[in-house]
Length: 293
Ligand SMILES: Nc1ncnc2c1ncn2[C@@H]1O[C@H](COP(=O)(O)OP(=O)(O)O)[C@@H](O)[C@H]1O
Ligand SMILES: [Mg+2]
Image (tube, rainbow, N blue to C red; front, side):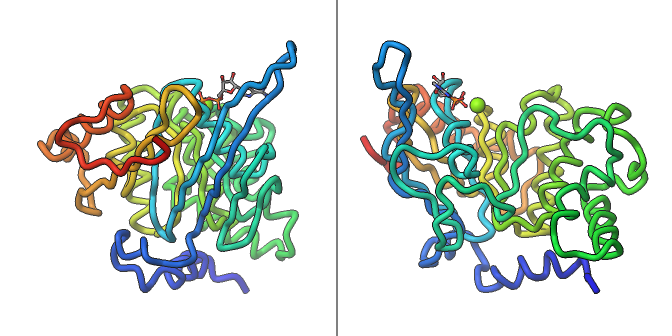
């Protein structure tokens, strides 16, 4: 019988030796290892459009990492390559040391910006959608769905339909659906981009609390610098041109964060570093780890 809490105790056991993200940096097996990934398209006039080049990034178990970059710099392309939805032109993607390049799989859960719930299914049916394809009894599926409904605080909306939910609630269902499949890695592409400012802030707090509870490994894309800093242990900054990762900035804030931390001088200092990096400048006081430049 499924003990839903085993879902997270398993995740926690995997990471039990990592009391702090920085210790995880020495872990020889990264949860996600993106090696020299490049992507180009040929245009109608038979020219080569290079969208990504020499992308290298690693995420350790239980890290939450954000990738920031301006619109059109290649963020979604990179996430879709990691998810296996589009093949890279070069390089490879490893999850738990295994190549997953060009192969979608349930080891990578995806949450998109747009609401991707099935409108004809209830909230509970949406969360359980992927489970029906797995070898799992109906009672096990049900237990798991209700466990994750609780995790995202939507227990009383099990029988509601997506149109009856607010934008923030829909995204919580999408996160629960991704988590119900026990992904090794949660990939999110601007998941809060369509929400109003207040709901977005609530969702950031929700995600941080969820991460503290579950110790899931997350790669999230955003163009919102404050969001990236508030949520992550490290931020990768993509350059505006050339499809490269320009810098990697460790976020040296306490692991447990309150929303007011956004007003602290340390937070503002880090924000300045990230903004300078985004604007293709390097701040004189920053200690940026420069990649590919
Ligand atoms: N299938 C495609 N064919 C040609 N160009 C594409 C394709 N998909 C994305 N691009 C181009 O790749 C660049 C990066 O797109 P994208 O990854 O969506 O950026 P971001 O998510 O950072 O806004 C854009 O210039 C876009 O036009
Ligand atoms: Mg995008």
